[in-house]
Length: 499
Image (cartoon, rainbow, N blue to C red; front, side, top):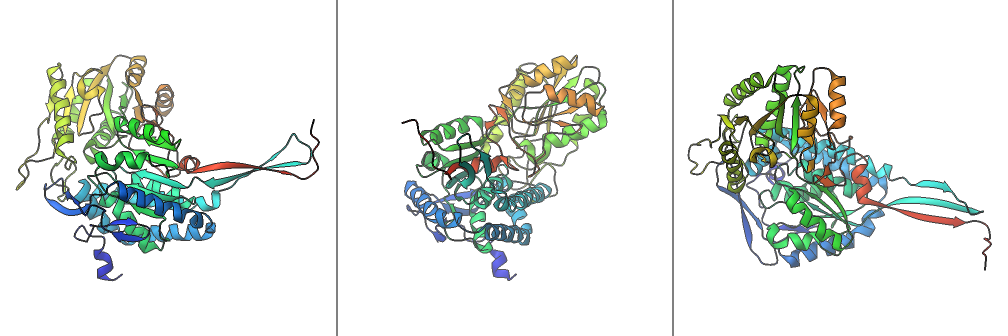
């Protein structure tokens, strides 16, 4: 492709316009928001500061385009989704750079994000042909029952900042593939990768005007207008439970369908029969991938008392040797997204130590050349932790390993379930069968035996229980959220009525 086309996907490209009804336009106010690189703390671009008028315009465009898009033949919708997959693949290197610059994702994690997004798009490409209904016999003589599946209409996607690419793709693309149009409100920290990038990809893939509409802006200013808009039929949100409750309540005012993937407090159970090296390997990845800023990362390490000391020693040694620094360098642990998140993580660590835990390693920030206020938090390990300490009972969302001892499997399960969340988890018990028996007792939507919790495959359901959300993503789960069933009965013979 030509160099000028490639440059459209650089952070140095012009990202100062909203995308509404197939047009790039300035915000109603004309104001912009600065986007900063969490590694360097420098402003790298500016995006529009959308307001309520922009939100209304986006929904108007989406609603206007939806009828014609729904009537587009399945084969054509599938073709356009495949075009989208090819377009993303063509620009994958630039997207990885965008993820490093805007989201602080190290190169390997950025490549993983692209892979996961492409997996989501490939799965979504199969949906137009899977929009099948049912046929049912009737208790009424001469009647035929037909149940057909139809798109909901306009789907709202409020995307997160931690994995803005793939966690946006898993909602945007299936919704569109099923015949809906979408309005995207990306997180304030990652408005390019979580929103405007998709507008550019959809445009280059050849989608009709109005199928995707992107409004950037501060959640505090337009979040309510987006979540509660009366033309929104589905609201897909990924983020904290606290914010998710407000979003779901706003969506509920319009009886819109809610698909909420919220917080987690995921447990990594290690029994005395576990392969300790494998358990530590999994524990390191499950805690430090993307600096722990993963809803399905390990929040608590529950380790049998007989192997507890050895586990702590091994994982602390690994943590001390993990390179941490700028996402633009060859490191494993990069920056936290912003100072409020960083400060909260460090506060949890400090409060946990004050409550009696032992700081084995970490607990401070990593100094970076030329950066006055580093957002890189040292890989941190805490021992002698109890379930009620700050770093354990809260979703710390950082590179922190609280290690909690247990005496038997019953206690481990009790500790794992002692939380309002139920998103993911993992078990190392040596024997897969023993691990599965423990997994079945864990009150969580997903559990991974002899592994760690950070797993996502587009053809397998992804959902949580309790305060971790409602609805689901992947496979047919989000298709069910983004579509509705209509019952049509056909009376082929004259029917007799009682009066």
